[in-house]
Length: 99
Picture 1 (cartoon, one colour):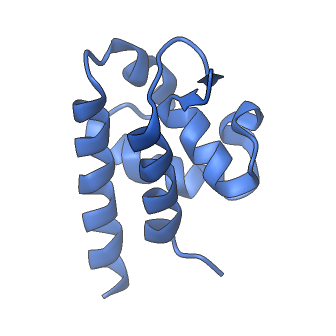
Picture 2 (tube, rainbow, N blue to C red):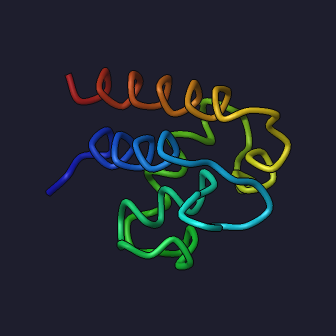
């Protein structure tokens, strides 16, 4: 079974390929929520209620202080760089928890 850090890395890779705001997925680009859902289920439109999503989403929410509002946080970001930085920190913390 993949770890939280593994799924965060998958989601981060999707964001790296293309990031968006205001929707889960558009033209192959995903928001933070869509990336997590797609990493877990293969379908960005499932949202955060996809099986296994909450622990992965909580890892990012803990970093950015957006508990329950990761989509809103994503939509307020000015650049993909800030979203990737949040995922990087969440991955770092998830790996430390598993060490």
